[in-house]
Length: 107
Length: 120
Image 1 (tube, rainbow over the protein chains, first blue to last red):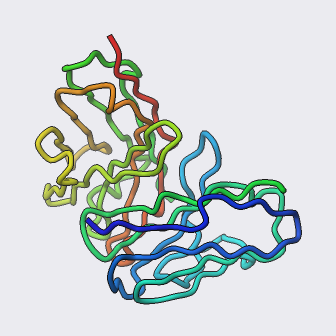
Image 2 (cartoon, rainbow over the protein chains, first blue to last red):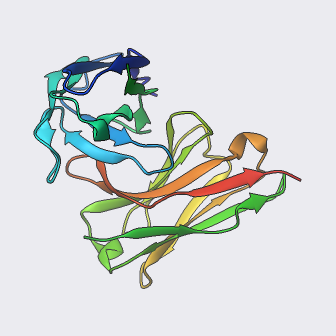
């Protein structure tokens, strides 16, 4: 299995902040990396696919970058609706695997 | 776009079989563009891919669950199903069905999730 790691596990931020979350794969996965947002009691929502492509309907305040092993998700001008847990997921191989998540909460 | 809805018992006894169904709002289960997947989330934890089925009936399972899991579908109907045998408390989780775009390897449509508790 491809064990994904994410850092930090949690971070505290304020409305209007810019935050950057990281995800790392144990080996080169190209750009087969997706990002999801999950709120309590809800299903995950796809934000970014193929490392840097914004899913239709997702705010352009979200952006993804990276290739190979290291990836980032950046949220600019943090909004109240953005406080959630964010997961990365590799699509390079089966079984599909997700990172352990980064929770963004209020400072 | 398609909507997914999970259904099934919320309580299963240890050693029994967990059975869930995911119902689609349209006929896209027959599309060759998607895998139809099950994913679970243990309480307060991350996401675990269980497996998927393709329109040909081909399945692929997480090796960690392969000996206990089966995913099936009657492609003439708008649903696919999950069976997990010999359950224990460790199988207590929220179970999601999801559509995976084959081209982009993304889970782009999700059901709302159904909570399953394994307890006597």
